Amino acid sequence: MVKDMNKVSIIIPTIKTEKEIEGLISEIKNTVAYKLDLIVVSGMRRTAVNRNIGMERAKGKFIIMCDDDIEGLPYRWDRDLIDALKQTGASMVGPRLLNPDGTVQKTNNRNFDLSKDFVKVARICGALHVYKNTTLRFDENYIGAGHEDTDFCRQIWKDCRGTFFIVNTVKVIHRNEEKDPLGSSETRDGNRAYFRKKWGRMR
Image 1 (tube, rainbow, N blue to C red):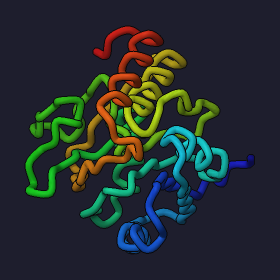
Image 2 (image 1 turned 45 degrees about the vertical axis):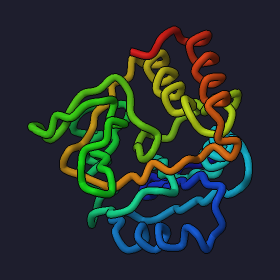
Image 3 (image 1 turned 90 degrees about the vertical axis):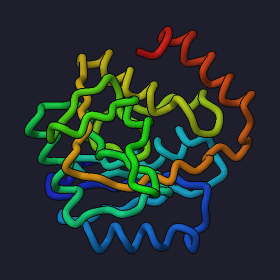
């Protein structure tokens, strides 16, 4: 697929209905700076499958993967994240994720450093992240949601010794809702075991 150098593809993988995410869609449309290529992939499938379907449809030079439980997007957040990607030379960047009460989430790779504009981390949480359009894909062996985003970071690291940064100048709320329709600790333990067999323990 030919990429449009002027587009940014925003992918929302979800198991929710259009009605349930219309607030997020409206928020995205009202806050982005770049020409919009919005792709919503809805279906009771593994999260990695929905992510990959979106990536196959993406036409932009850059991809923004956005979970369906993100809110509080600041004006021009897409441009600010992509500028950070270019400025740091990173393979992937993500915003500073906050809890609904405004506290810093531990899903920021357990990094709580707000002292710098950009903070280097070992991986980026899949809730919201930006990277250049790539032929790499999410591993669809992960059941439900969980670890498929960390696996993708490892693929990028292996492919090009990629680097990852949290962008403190862009703060968003991540409600961190349960995405796994199976929703069991057994499923999460299975994903963790599969990840460790493939990559070893997470850094």
